[in-house]
Amino acid sequence: MVVETRVSYASDPAKSRGRLRPEPPSPTRTDFRRDCDRIIHSAAFRRLAHKTQVFVFHEGDHFRTRLTHTLEVAQIARSLARALGLDEDLSETLALAHDLGHTPFGHAGERALNRCLAGAGGFDHNAQTLRVVTALERRYAAFDGLNLTWETLEGLVKHNGPLISRDGQPIGRYREHGVPLPILDYGRLQDLELWSFASAEAQVAAIADDIAYDAHDIDDGLRADLFALDDLAEVEFLREILARIRQGGAQIEPARTGHEVVRRVITRLIEDVIGETAARLQRLSPSSADDVRAAAAPVGAFSSAMAEADRAIKGFLHPRMYRHHRVMRIMGEAETVLYDLFWRYAEHPGDLPADWSHATEASDDAGRLRRIGDFIAGMTDRYALVEHARLFKTTPELR
Image (cartoon, rainbow, N blue to C red; front, side, top):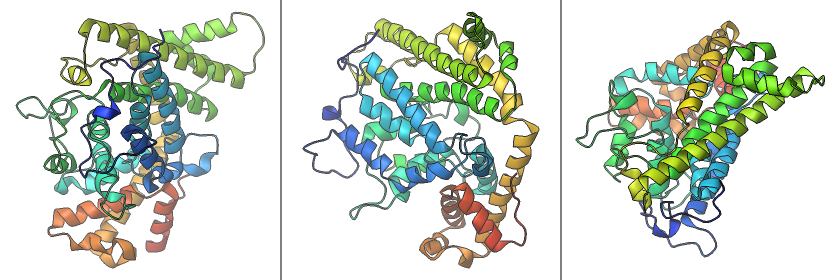
């Protein structure tokens, strides 16, 4: 099913709830297109080129970085939005921005900063993305941040679902430790309605991230020899795809077979999401984007059978890739690098670059530590290693 016109429940840039700081409209671009362009031109977006996805930068030019992963998510998000009649620009914006808050060295960096900031509210990459686009980017004379539309900000914060119940209690992943402070702080300026779902555009951007992870981590894992093609047959969904590729009997070299697996995985997952999301929308029969937000369940989703396949793929990848001893050793050393840097800057603020010296001027200790966290979270892998080598006698090679 392909929808060629925007449906009634799509987000309409002409009816946007606007920006925190009002700006004159553009004569040539919609508000969502302007948001997308602002993301692309941001410093944080450029830095994604040198941030780890799973493999650190020196392991090879063909492995994915945060930037290449982000571009792949954006392509899938646009495909989903186009097929469902949603606003493609908004889905692309959310896909391009969703990883801006990630630290160097992937989830290892996030673990390190969360430990360092335990007494100051912890670290959450989703909350950090909000900080990047509302405060840390400094490109405009009139304001800090990018002054994005309400729809983009709510999509970045809520793309995985509501954060609180209608009575204000944290839910889901935030039930134990509460909603991250940067999100609560911003909420005092602009209510992002944390109790509701985000737009359909945000929901398909989030599931595009899942699709990209499944397919492309298979590709990178094969390339890194962390597992072999025949190992994929442990997952029924992948076994079926492999069998179909090999059905013809033609001898296809392993690398080309791996690419064909990835291509077919992406296609199957996209087609499933389009079908399931269209069915859910038909049952809900929303007449506006706000009807989607107010729904009792998400509209963007895999079917139950494909959700099981998604879990099986992730279950396959987790021990063989993310927890592989080679990856774990390097990421353990990466955590140490960021941990060292954080406490060095905390104890010797003069070691911070001159343009970050204001990090020590916060009114309280938690604010000072948060600013140090902002600086480290924005580093690329290479810059973190260079800084560590500048400040310490020995620095891990992460090889």
